[in-house]
Image 1 (cartoon, rainbow, N blue to C red):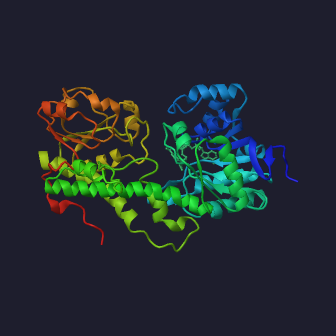
Image 2 (cartoon, rainbow, N blue to C red):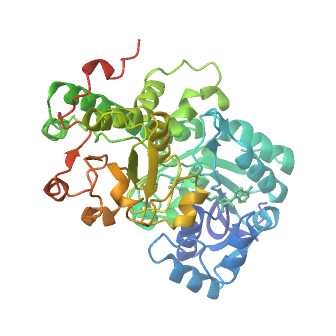
Image 3 (cartoon, rainbow, N blue to C red):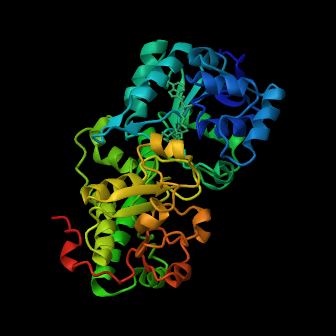
Length: 463
Ligand SMILES: NC(=O)c1ccc[n+]([C@@H]2O[C@H](COP(=O)([O-])OP(=O)(O)OC[C@H]3O[C@@H](n4cnc5c(N)ncnc54)[C@H](O)[C@@H]3O)[C@@H](O)[C@H]2O)c1
C-alpha cells in the first residue's frame, strides 16, 4: 500500500499535496510560485542561504518576473510556500520533486553535470517510495535515465520505475515572461516508464493550463529542448552568412529575409553581431558533445559546430566592418553599447559583448562599454571599462560605436557628446538611423550591403 501521507495519490498519480522545487533561481522560484498558486504546498530547496532566508521572510530574490514579489509575499504569508537549505528535508515531505538547477559548459565547452548530480544525490537522501522526481534542467540526451537515475538510486537505495517515478520535462520558458510562457508553451514530458509518465502528466495537468505533449521516453524529451535551441543557433548562423553574402554583393539582407519569410516554409531569423544567453550558444554543445550523457557513439554533428563558429565569428566581422570605414582600430576608442546578452535584461551569460571586446582588443582598440542596466562598479567587476564620465576622455574620444544589446533606452540614445564618432554599427537594429546620420555619422547594419569588406573575408564554408 502506497504511503498517502505526503500527497493525494490516485492510482499511483499525485494530483495535489506537497511539491519540492530544488533550485530557486530565475526559473525555479517562478515555478514554485506557479505550483503554489495551483493548490500545492511548495517547499523550495536551495543551497544559497540568502535565497532561503529571503524567501522565508516573504521576499523574492528574483526581481525580474512581473508580479513575483507580491505573489511570494502572499503565498509565504498564507503558508503555501516555504524554503529550506536542506534538500533531503524538503524532499522527504514531498510527493513530487522538481529539480531545476543549472548545467553549464566550462571554458573548453565540456558539459559540467557536477551541480545537478550533487542536487540529485541530495534528493536521493530524502527520497521516499512513491515520489515522482522530475528533472527540468536542459540536459544532454541520456542524462536523466543514466547519471541522474544512478545518483538517485545509490543515495536512496530505491529503484527508479519500481519504487519511485522518474521523468524529464524541459523548461522552455524565457526569464522575464515565465508566467505567460507557462500558459502557452506545450509542456513536453517523457517518463522512464509508463507509470512515471502518467504521474508526470497528472502533475503538470494540475499546475499548468498549457497542453501537454507526451514523448516516448526521457531521452526523447531531453532531445526536444536541444534541437529547438540548436535550430535557432543554426538558423541565426545561416542568417549571418546570408548577411555577409549580402554585404559582399551590395544587397540588403533584411529586405531579402522579410520577403523570403512571406513564403510559409521560410523562417529565417535575423543576423547580428553574435548570439548570447544561457541557452542558444550553450545547448548546441550538449548535442555536439553527445557522449557526455549516456548516449555514446552517437554520430558526430557537423552543422551545429559550424553554426557556433559562424556566430562567434560575427565579433571579428563587426571589427572588419568598422575598420573598412575608419581604417585600423589600433589605438582608437570604440564604445560597445550594452553588455547584457539581450535587450532589457540584467544578464550577461555568454554575451556577445565579451567576444566583441576581445576582437576589438586583439586589433589594438581601446574599448569602453555602456549599459544603463549596470552600475559602473558592476561593469568594472565584469572586466569591462565603463566609458569615462569626463567628456573629453569619454564620449568625445569615441571614434566608433557598436550597439550590442537592444535596450529600450538606446532607441533614444543621445549622440550629441560623440563629436569624434565616425561610424556606428547597429548590431541589433536598436538605434535611430536618422538620428545617427543627422550627426554626420555613418550608420551600418550587419547585412546592409554597404560593406567595403572584401568578399574573400567572408567565412569559409565547412568542408
Ligand atoms: N534562465 C533561463 O532563462 C532559463 C530558461 C529556460 C530553462 N532554463 C533552465 O533552468 C536551469 C536553471 O536556470 P536558472 O536561470 O534558474 O539558474 P539560476 O542560476 O538562476 O538558479 C539556480 C539556483 O539553483 C541553486 N542551486 C545550485 N545547486 C543547487 C543544489 N545542489 N541544490 C539546491 N539548489 C541548488 C542556486 O543556488 C540557484 O539559486 C538552466 O540550467 C536551464 O536548464 C533556464
